[in-house]
Image (tube, rainbow, N blue to C red; front, side):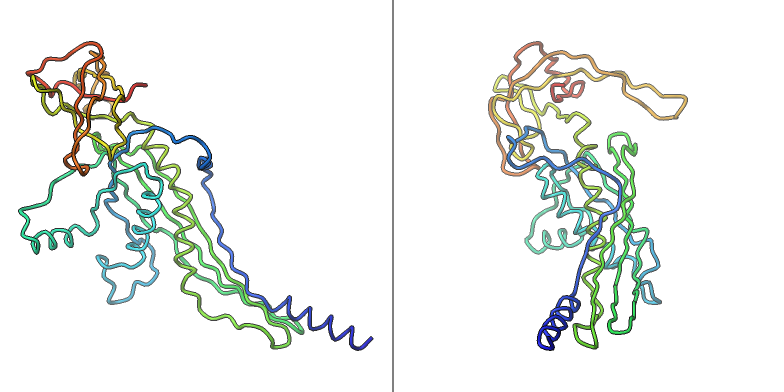
Length: 313
């Protein structure tokens, strides 16, 4: 009987002396990501840039704090960029470290950077960040839980109008728990990785909504040239434009000022034709183009700025 009790006692200690780590994502609710088993969806990539991601909390802001070198803000940018890139639905444009890119161009002797405008800008901030330790002491055991909570705010801006088309807040939480019985077990030390996990958990809840809002608005392109050698439009392989794809051609609507908002708005354009992609060229998003031909309709070749191309709805 003594031996049995000893074995049971050791088993209880072994079970109790554990380290548990948990990452919690807290609202908002988003749609589930499509399964990898489904056929690949055809879409045209949007150009997106993260204009700013700042740390608006008081965490780690001492007397020598440098807002231009804030580790939490930079960490949030890197996490968001990685998660957006993994969706494979965007052409991501660098904005945070442009000075390093320009420095490298100068070293290489290049004349300058090709300027590419984004379709959407992302503005974000870490608005909540905190860490707490909670202990529990019993007669034979004690436990300690470290918890980190982070709150992230995101705004998605349509560059063509300056309008905020999506804004939301999400919260994430990460925690680790250590438990000892009669002094046996692993002690809890400071876990710096919890900060990363809490911010990542909060941002993860927003990525799918960013994708959905960017994809809701039809993709647009423009005519580059119209000659007897062919009709060229902007966009190519990196934007998932394929030979055989068809797009509608519209004449731009009239620009009027809305007296209620004070903003200039473009009235709906008039469809004037449909084009089909015959060839795509270029080796990067900056110089890609597609050669198209009209399936129906046509345009004034001497006034290409009057027209735009967009996805068939």
